[in-house]
Length: 326
Image 1 (cartoon, rainbow, N blue to C red):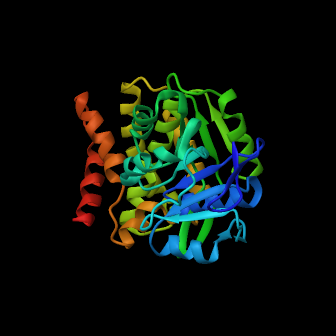
Image 2 (image 1 turned 90 degrees about the vertical axis):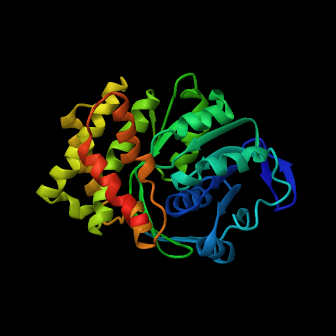
């Protein structure tokens, strides 16, 4: 492990982790800010557009569940429009990919030179298939399954509203690293107030998050509401039925997910905890950006077709959201 002493100079310091957060939108910026405030001094944040430029000029302002500004000299901001700084090759110990699902592969490819032989990779982007892509690209010994339930959105460039406190879950995926390999990362996230959890079954971890996303995101995006609006009984029933369609496909793939009753309880808990949050899909729709629907509801539909199972509600939501992007 090494310590950044400046953008250009690197010296060794064995008790520090060098962390990179690539694709720092709302969630990535929250993670980076919390780690920089409480965790380590050595963090690279890669972002783009007005938000990235604002962070490079003024740091990161967090509002909502906590209020603080991070302006740490050791927090290195790189911009997608410019690229990474020289001198960071092989220096990153923990890589978080927090981008939109559509950008995951591009950031994987760009991160290669930053990593060393012991680097660990955590992809927190929404949707199915990211862990498998990371394993194929980086090797199974480096990659954790992961999900995040913190709620965050950006009221303006450089500012992140922490709308709901949740957790960051890590898990073992196939032959990938286990709990002992995650100890430094879990300690870092714990010190940073990001509530880490460990899940032995990484496939269950990924699917559990996807089921919540397919239930909440497209409905909130179409209505244009905060998550909490979905607690109304008729809307919650709709969200639940969408989720259960997906759960049936997960079970078809022999994923050990909770019972329907437990899933509904989890859905209610997450919506309540993030009641003031505007989900990422709604933010994308408002700003005319491409959504992540193909990695969520559309991915469920495509997997269902392999088994000859109908998922009409997920299919309808996929078509409706895609029509907004056309």
